[in-house]
Structure formats: structure tokens, C-alpha cells
Length: 438
Image 1 (tube, rainbow, N blue to C red):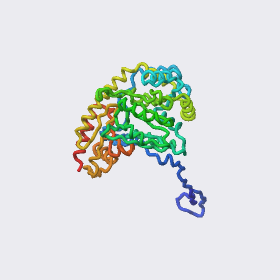
Image 2: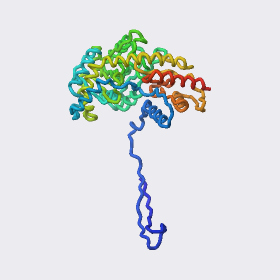
Image 3: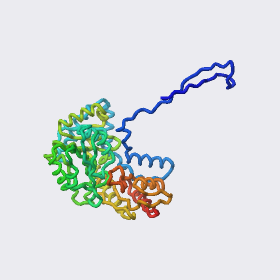
Image 4: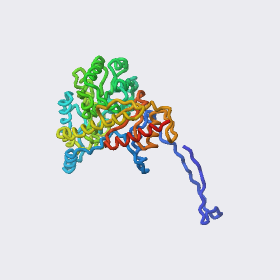
């Protein structure tokens, strides 16, 4: 802190005179507040950063085509909204139990048991403020800071997994999937990454950012390796489970690690309503864990957020029990867009792609264009440069690959959670811009 003493004079003319009354006062300049190193060292979410840049460009009047945000462009089905409105009007506005009301937790338990084969009772479920909240708490519960814990992460992977692992006090060990193998890791890679310090793995299939679902037999093979290591907890993020496209990959289905008896006692299954039900703004996630672990996580939640809004709980029941038709309409539309996006990207020189068979992302490698210069003079030396120049020069927003893992530094992520018109128009802009690189 630094202080400066100055004098002030009161005079009608604005100049100091013998009749002026003179006083002194101190101006104090304050140092910024201290920020802990674990927070200061965190990077901003790359997807949210690009979304903000796209919004700023729109505010300036530019016609921006945004492939950045992982958010369905559909509205929440009307039947779900009506139930929430009715609950609100009936006065469901008070505190609810931290993990949610019994009816909603029972609906989730039935869903996991019947659809996923993950035997679950309502006591094992807690409803969270989005799936990210569930993942945060699960990691906080399994990691012991200062012990040297390591958590495995198959990559490319969602941008928040690594920061959340590190925030909890563990080292994130990336296991790189290759484009040539459809971004999927192998049991041999998994085995090679396991050390005496490995205490967990964050698993995500269908994948953000890759837009792929692992075949069930490959998931089982990876689980067979995990079964050998009793100390390893599995956090399985299945938020995109209903957005799988057998129209593109015949026979592809969801497989939950928690459905295996040999892993059920150390698997935390994470899911939510944001993606499949077009409910991103509702912030409804959930997790199911072995009972003893669930109790500990609920204890943590009670010191954080407590419950989500109480009038959401009947809507959760409605979504999980009476909304399959609406979900299927959206899934089929996404499947059509997945094929369109892949076909369009195939026309862009130098792009290498894996056909998306799940979620709503394409993740092309654009590194063939590194070392080139854009029409506006931007040197393209990374995915970040590529994405920045693309937005600045032709107003197309994509997410650069750097924060999805070391192996993804040559990639960009495009979301096809947008209209077919925007897909065609946006890829045309990208194609023309790429052709202009020198």
C-alpha cells in the first residue's frame, strides 16, 4: 500500500490566497487482492472464451456463424416446461433436500437401472447444478491433495476435465487417442499409463470434443484392464448417451462401466438433462455412486450449493418418463446434421476428419495449414491462430484444440448443434478462406 499526502485550498477564484483555508488529505493506492496460485494458474474455459468473442463480434454488427458452443439449438420440450410451470405455480419454491426430492431421485435411479444396467437406489443419487458440478464433487471426493495422486484422462477431452483434476490436487495424465484410430485409446495404452499413483480415470463416451462413441466391446476391453486395479475409481461422464447415431456407425450403442459387477463398487456415473433434452440453462445434472461415496458427496454438496430449484424436480421426472419421443426427434435431426457436417468438411482442402457418430461435434485436424498466411496477414502457426483469424476475417467461430489435450493442438472443434443452413453456409466460408491461405 502506498500513501500520498496532498493539500487542498478553498478559494472562490480557484487560486490560493492568504484567506484560503488549507487542509491536507491522503490518497491511498491499494494493492490487488491476493489470488491463490491454484486459481490464478487456471485457464479460462476455451469454449466460453470463443462464445464471448463471437458475441462481441455480433454486437459490432457482424454476421457470425457460431460453431463454438455445445448447446442444442432446440427448445426444451413443452411437456417438460409445463410441469415446471405448474410446480412453480403450486408453490414449490422452498428449500429442498440437498440431493433432491425423493421422486426425482427415484426416477433417475430407475433410469440408470433399466436403461444403463447400473443397479441404483435413490439413496445413491444426488441431483446437481449441472454435470460439471457433479464431476467437480466426484473429483474432490476421490483425490487426496499432497499424496501425489494421478488421474487418467483419455484425450482429446472436454476442456474442463484437466483443470478440475488439478484443482482437486491431482496430476492429470493424458492418454492420447489418434485420429487414425478414431480418437479412441486402446487397452495397451491404458495399461501403460497406470502407475502406483493412479487413483482414478475420467471416462467420457460419447466424447466431447471428438463426436465419437466407443463401441461397446472396446469399452468392455478397457474396463477389463481397470478391473485389475482395485484402487482406481471410475468417473464415467455419460451426458451425451442419448445422442448416438447408428445411422452412421451401424450397431453403435451406449455402454456404462458401472453396469459391470466388477466395477460397480468403484464407479461414479455422471449424467444430466442439458444435452439430450435441450435443457442447458436449467443446470440439471446428477450422479450416482456407491452408497458410502454418495453420502460423502452429498455432504460436500450441502456445504456448496445445497439443492437446485425445487420446482425443477417434477420436470426431471417428466423428462425421464414421458419425453422419449421428443428426444428421438432431436437425436434424428442431429444424426442428419452429423452426416452433413462431415460431408461438407470433406470438401475443405487439408482438413482430416473422423466421421462423428455421437454427440454434436466434428473435430478436424487443420495442421496442414500451419505455416501459411491469411489474406489479412495473420500467420497461421497453431489451432489458436487459425481460430482467431477465421473469426476475425470471415466471422466463423470455432474452438481451437489446444485445451482439449496435447494431442489436439492441431485440431479445431465445430458444433453442429445449429441449423443445416448455417452448417452449409459456415463451411463454405471456411472453405473459401482456407483456399485463400498462402
